[in-house]
Length: 545
Image (cartoon, rainbow, N blue to C red; front, side, top):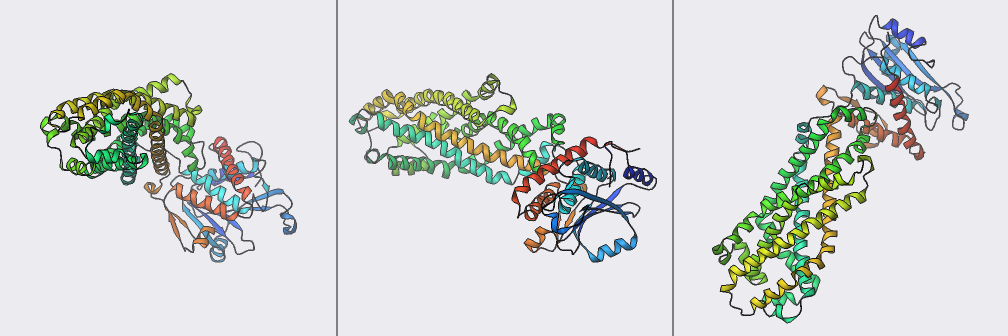
């Protein structure tokens, strides 16, 4: 095959114009392998009228002794086969990939790939360890399938429907992180109270069990308090938190995907530049990460506040304060006075509720004031955002939790038998702010880390499903048969059916890894060159009259 510098000129294009009188629609592409040593790969293109075209890459000078060391111009061939030649090939070679093409797949797509290969300064050179027949055959199939099956942005409903089952595991993971974060705040503050307390005036107001726990080493005390709170949340509210987090995840992800959908015209222009579907992750991840980072604080506090409302309501009920729930009675047996448990419950609920109100719109306000272009956002920006949101919500939660704790103590103090209890609370109120400040830095670091981990996990999952949905070709009724390839030999499978562009590309990517295992430094070069060929083919391609 020879081409001039101008698209549409030359013998190949002349033949194509003549063939248009019959048909130029491709119904099937195959990659076949002969029994040579090493095996030779080539492409067969089947047209609607039964015409079969063979495409090969060989060196112009076939001297196997020098091919490893010399780089010479490739002799890419284009040959129309007779019926007998096709029959012979079917008997003497094996089919690696058999891909039915969608309707109206024009032969000029294949020509555009060959044109791009001929004009790429690197890819047009035959290199036994790089730009060989494997590279040629896989590039033709990859680029043609990419063009014939264009990527399109799926609707939010399409993506969310594929995420439904995945959200079960994700919501459970985020529930564990959310509970760990909330309980960590409470435990750090209680531990800080002990660290800054003036002395015996606090301990003298404790019940015997509370005094015992207060005297334990800090880490052990921290662990026991954490377990007490965790016992209530997990046995009493775990399912509710899990359910609401799954609902919240669905709502947040749908909102983010709606943004992608609304901007799909702009996004698709960028998407069309990509050959490898997995590279779309690089395009979508930054946007999804930014949006989720801006929404996550409000979403989490909404979920936690609504889940902890039963604790809030019980603390408003004076009778309930005197007759705590079965879970509270269990905790009181393990950890002492019921009053302290009611203070924990109410302060936790009030702090989360106030944090929810404080978080409204503040992340987006921070983002708007930062004036950072989308492509320039760095990991340190997200840390700064989360630190800012933590400080804002933490400060307001301080006031809310203190006020409500005082209210609970006032409502329950009259029936308390320990006369030194009131002095204990006075001392706690006195050092409350100091203890809260002492717990801030340690708490901020752990909460921000938990936020980052949850965002990372969610963004990865949503991006993967978004990209997979973009590459879904099963809805087009297409199935690609793969057999006898390098990957099949390694896995000892006879045949495998691929139902997505993503699956086909993943197969080819793994095959490239195996084929070039002896020269691994060439693998990224192969991927990059294929992408260049796609770009050249895409930009030069136009109909031929």
